[in-house]
Length: 318
Image 1 (cartoon, one colour):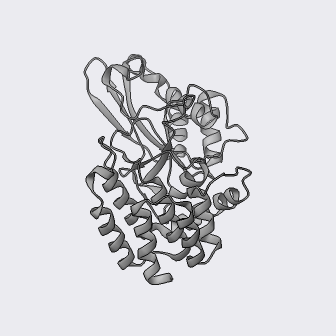
Image 2 (tube, rainbow, N blue to C red; image 1 turned 90 degrees about the horizontal axis):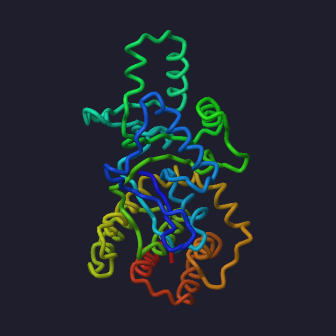
Image 3 (cartoon, one colour; image 1 turned 30 degrees about the vertical axis):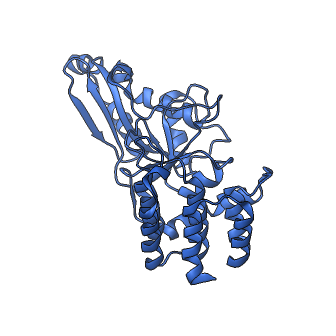
């Protein structure tokens, strides 16, 4: 599972497209595919104005505490990418493209940036015959790609090889546990209950999550009336339940990935005029459970699901 924050309210924000129509797919020659992908990644990690790929993190906490400073933006959840081996190894990395003439979809499995670099170097050691040259100039439509870019050293080598430019010094894909997608049309999207996600994350981070707590919170989510969720096709209820299960199973991995981000957030010079969810997160970490609950009630947010989550934890920790 990977996560992303989307800024849909900012008039000058860079708004991304999660599903590309067939006519909008970029058309390139097959021999330009590696360079095309590398340039799209370079624009994203170096903060170019025309970036368009989708940057996700394998840590929910990184998204909540680093990329949602107003704590009011959509939380995207991609449940098709998952990680194994202490949450370091992705289940898949791939490139997909369509032959423009035949319409055939080609799916190429990748094994990390190192695999791409090795294949490129091996390919260019071999002499090219005429049939290979013709095949490489075949027009293709870039359909999708999914690549883990969370190793700064490897990413820098990869970008230099294919684009001639490396990472900017301020880029932080390794710290952010970054994963790149070209399309992600099946995301679950949290729109109305992002504050509840902060409350839940803060409580799980500090106290953990017993199986009984997990089950009670999922029941609470199921009890919310349908009209309390966003009315478009974003599967918010199911997305919330996925997050509960994710945090139940991956608390240790989140602790490992987000520790430095929490320190940075604590030392941030961004101050809020009200008790926003990020401030609530830190209050839960620093105060007793009872004090944090009192502070939450003073905020007068009155979000049913957040209150219910606090009530469930109160049975065990108050």
